[in-house]
Image 1 (cartoon, rainbow, N blue to C red):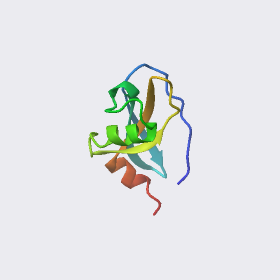
Image 2: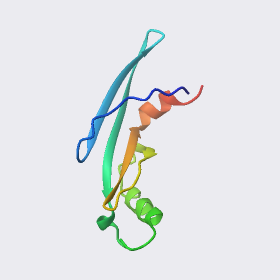
Image 3: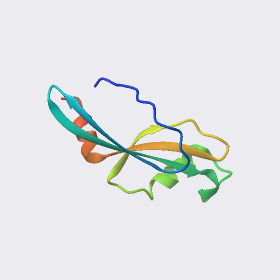
Image 4: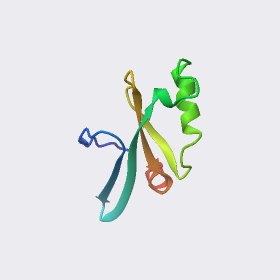
Length: 93
């Protein structure tokens, strides 16, 4: 699959991102969301951060799948999700 980088404004908190693309006259809508996962919300905030992310993701809506894990800060890690329907369309055929 090809990639195109689209800059997204850096806004605080959760972001819902809907993108409509036209490829060879075929229109598809892609749905993403970015959520901030705060380290203080971990059951063991002093533990390994990978375990913390895994723990937080087990409670996440299964209609969305992880697309990208951003650079963590001291307070949170931004995680981009794509809805399962959009992900199906993006699979290599």
